[in-house]
Image 1 (cartoon, rainbow, N blue to C red):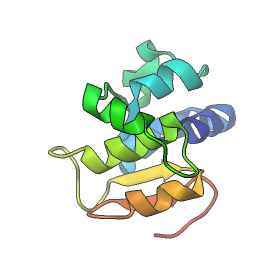
Image 2: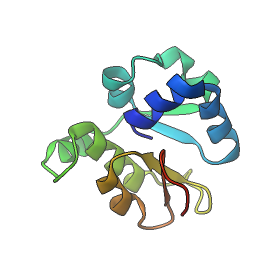
Image 3: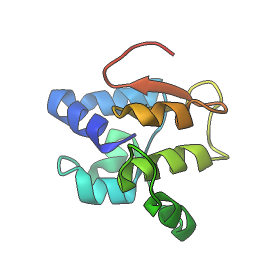
Length: 122
């Protein structure tokens, strides 16, 4: 999940994050996003909110630093981690959440579905 969605949920009702984690999909957030963009949540609160912080590998961070049209480093990092998260991913419930349109296409591949914080639907 990207910073914009987390910030919006915190401002609306932070308990929604826990509900998403319990009933829709685990909430994976790259640690650089939590540390550098989301002031509303500190790392100590992650477990209570159902957030799974992910430390990206050096390779993933370097790949995220390469230019990609329409995506910041943090947005690109979210895309890459969503793409690369394997193993504990559920093919029926894992969702990429973000509010930047370019993330929709990379996240929609494979078994992951796209949900925007502003639109409903698959």
